[in-house]
Length: 466
Image (cartoon, rainbow, N blue to C red; front, side, top):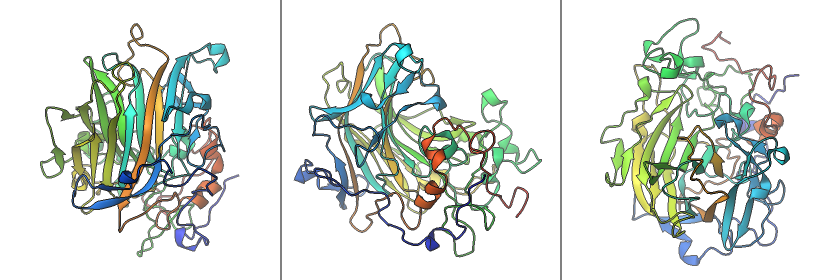
């Protein structure tokens, strides 16, 4: 049976809690960790250094022995699943995430496959999905990267995603990731082409070489601005009666890699719909790289499933588990939306590169509109992955177990723009998630429709009409 949600959008749900699912906090837990030093309660914006921002969330991980099994922690939940979407070699097990010596530890180890879902490796992923989210501001974390700065194969990452999609749960993600879009046009349609036509031409050529040059294999934006009235949609509704386009955008603090024997981080945002040839408008107005000796634009721009804007920065080569094990600060600062929106990434405590929203503005070749810097409530993910999808693995030299150490995670926001919570009134998520809860809790569901979750994709007025 197809479940149906109210068609009234977000404004008529009643009882919206503007702070989302932030739980009642027991004992030692509060939104600002009691162990956060007072000098960290404010921080100046990297982009506008005269602006002093407020700490709105912190976790210092100073209490040893925390458990992140489901229900044990107010902010984080460790996953118990195989991350099939990137062909990972590990099983994510909640027992691999713990706190010790003032840090969160995520550990990858080799195990007996018969005791590990027939997988040879076991690791950890924690998420704040539906527990803590933020919209706009600065997120920072201090990290010792796992392994060595000279041996490639580990895939540690700390990243964020819109709360309407849950990382690892394919049904929740299909048609939402990696969209960030609020226009009603061909960008919302499957493959970015008009029904029954191989148009626009830019969507059919100079795309993914592994897909015959086709630009997009995405199924279309499931919760788009083209959604027909009366269809299931989380809302809200624009003044013109159109739904607000909703999605699960991704902004990464970092994914760490080793390239030519040098440790680097890819710091990126993922986007859909796509520019022609995945080439964004990276003029000097829209792209700033602050130290070209340390940071360059990633030559990889995307493929049929995602467009990426990524900077590659050389890390502090000592700040690895097998180096001097120093902590290095990574993060990003962003302003959501269209006008004056931006994302600035931080590596080794310094701003390293910025994309302005105009860099992903409208593209006449693919006939798509501007993609906003994520306006969705974003939750936090930290994981230590192991996959051949991310540049190969030096099995001969990699040392296991390997651990990523996280000293803290802190979120700051402008004094006049505090916006935390996973269910904000202008981008609600709670009722929609409740309606389709199995999509967010059953990782075996790989898609939204038959034969997976058996749900109906809302009608799009450009694809068959209303």
